[in-house]
Amino acid sequence: MSNMTRWNPMGEFEDLFDRYHRYFNLPRTNGEREGMFSRSDWAPAVDIKETESAFTIEAELPGMSREDVKVTVHDGVLTIQGERRKEEETGDKKHHRVERVFGSFTRRFTLPDNVDQGNIGASFKDGVLTLTLSKVEPPEPRAIEVDVH
Image (cartoon, rainbow, N blue to C red; front, top):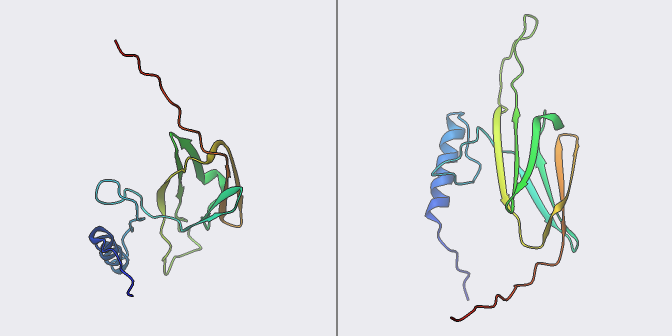
């Protein structure tokens, strides 16, 4: 028995586009489709983990402080946004090579129904933003009586 893989032409196109941007050292997409391409200058790497009681999102934000990052939740969507500012050259310091990407970013995640949107913890340590999203029982479907006239 062989494994089947579903072909994703948009995913292949995004991979090609990302390779093009890396080759020419341009801002890359972050895998989110806002229109055809991402509007962010860059995107932090993110790990998402799950335990019985919570989801954990860890975002790598090297060189940033907690004041550079904003986390919001609205209508079931968690948004992480911020900006990494480029260090300016001074008279006694000259940049010979800059490979890190600077600028603004936005990452959005649709939350599952079993996340307590009012109970999300956030911490920032050693350039890693950690969000803890507590789980709750998903709401039961509610029957609605329909009047017949």
